[in-house]
Image 1 (cartoon, rainbow, N blue to C red):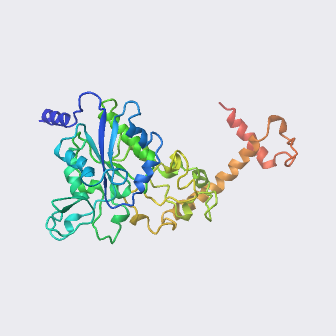
Image 2 (image 1 turned 180 degrees about the vertical axis):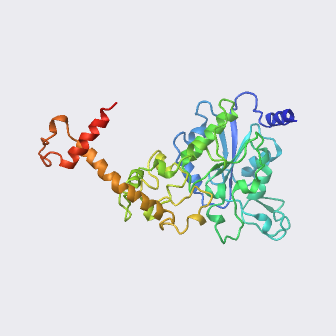
Image 3 (image 1 turned 90 degrees about the vertical axis):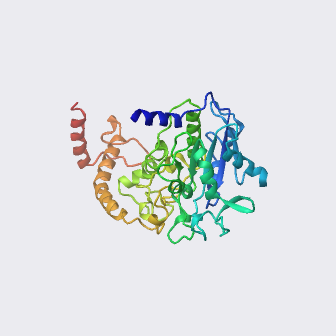
Length: 378
């Protein structure tokens, strides 16, 4: 029995023979603001243009069908969708969803509006009936080589799925279900963010394409389908302000250089690499620009991070402990710093016209005496 299951899984994940020269990308729009598309257009490593031109070594050329970027319209635009559904494309295809999945079944007759009960979001029509994005997902995702959700709306539901929404919005993983696998045996791949870092998306796409080429193993994803190497650490881990938190130094106003936790930053618990990678080409990002982390990459966003820009409830406890520890750590570090800012010859005075000329205070001399004993103890 186990052997049969293994053989079946191997058959499901069987790669096409030989390298792929081209691969189709069908970009679907759900409930979104197109911010994810704008973010991807700013990617640089590699750029979207490089992938579409087929100039990245080892990667196939992308043939992109995008609701905004494609120059085709009408039936010509939908032709790629229909050929993909019929299995008539000459290369595998990848489905990318931007925006949340609206629950079209809740309108009138409960069956994708076949009774003419209206729709939330649709792309094209068939026999005079609008085809909802939700229906396109059900038609195309099972036959796709990979299915990627870009942005928090597509991954977890995001702002359109906030409390009180009327559309029943959800993430793609919620809609397709736990057991969903693409034609190549992959679960849904999630690249969250509002909007996500463009290079996070492009890097993940490139890694998956290398896998589809048979050149590399499948990259590591976490239990929620996020690239583990991009979302495995918190904002705080890579934040340039993290050192201030350690010593209990917190900003009181926007524009201050210290840690932003008490101004509403959720960085210590949010999984995102914005602080270390930057928004575009390594530049910018929330904390670098003086803004707080509002948790936009997390499944609980926005409801569990509201009200935004207010001090997180748990930060009061952690900040109190940090201040207490920092009140001891800071003086000790400054004492050591002053000592290490003196050469061996400057034990009594500093030959500088810029600052005080006196020697070290008595308490520091005692502390440094014992410090050296420990330092030389081996």
